[in-house]
Length: 67
Image 1 (spheres, rainbow, N blue to C red):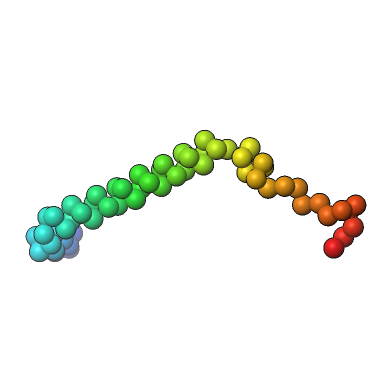
Image 2: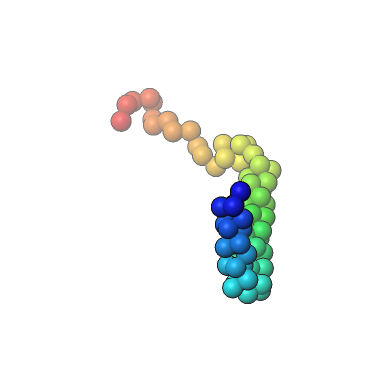
């Protein structure tokens, strides 16, 4: 238990050394990055497999000869 409190005190001293504005910027940038990832995933989920099937033509060559 004593080692745990020492670790907590070290983290608190580190957080006191870092300006709060810098800490806030890090938290906000991580949040914005995660939000953009979620938006991108929902965008591709909305487009679905139909759009990818339409974009990729079947890979057949002529009369079925192996190339």
